[in-house]
Length: 388
Image (cartoon, rainbow, N blue to C red; front, top):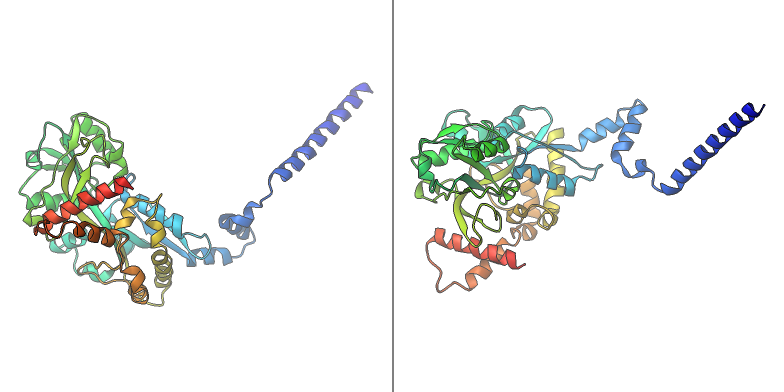
């Protein structure tokens, strides 16, 4: 009898503890997850057998192909999702891509991809080399984003770009935009390295081990990858802004503030920059794809000021919504938004105000050389940002 009484007591105790645990959990959890999570709502509705949730999610979703891991495009995609995605009226789904060339192909052919970040010189290269014809008519652009600087990392024993002639240089994967930019730049400068196509992280390790002679990456500064590169045997090589590069590129600089491990404190490295563009397929008005992009534009342009504030990528400060992309046609709803909001869109972040401040102190002494003036402005702007 005592054995049965003991078992009954044990079961009673276990049941009491279970009820107590449930009551405690309920007292601690005051929020129903389904009340705040659109994802949970969608899952619950899926169990009911209806397609309403699926149809709504697809109708409001924009798929954005970005770039490779460690690049600026991935961070830009994450920023857009963070600011614009409300989980209901608009859903932004960034996709890790394989570079500018592949992104163009994905926009044109991959089902579900609505937008992509591509580099402006890539389209020109594809047309000039005969790989594509009238490709700019098949695409449209939402906005020019920012400038992407060319980073060339090599051992300190190599002092100039010209010394890479005949040497082994990694230019990223063959589907990326870095390969295109590197090929254009080296060809115009008359330098003939031996290109290898290796993913950036692997290439950097090979460079440190002496297996290759340099790594090229065209990314918006500060490149998250190179901010942590701390091998004192390596440095950035300068890229001179020669006349042959001026039709497609802009002068730019890398600073020690951006890359303290690769540039001596207080010094800068001259380089060139290419434009990044937010591109879309030139879809017909009235289609679902067109309506999704229209919804995206309204949200994106209306919140550009938020993206230009911390903690988002510093490159957002360079975005001027009104900036044209020569040879491209802008997405019609994007142009309509700019026409309706001319006073808001006319100021590209703080750059216009900063440039006017810069000129105010140099109207008498500033060089008339546009390239030198631009470099002076970038140095002045970096100093102002550090003060802030």
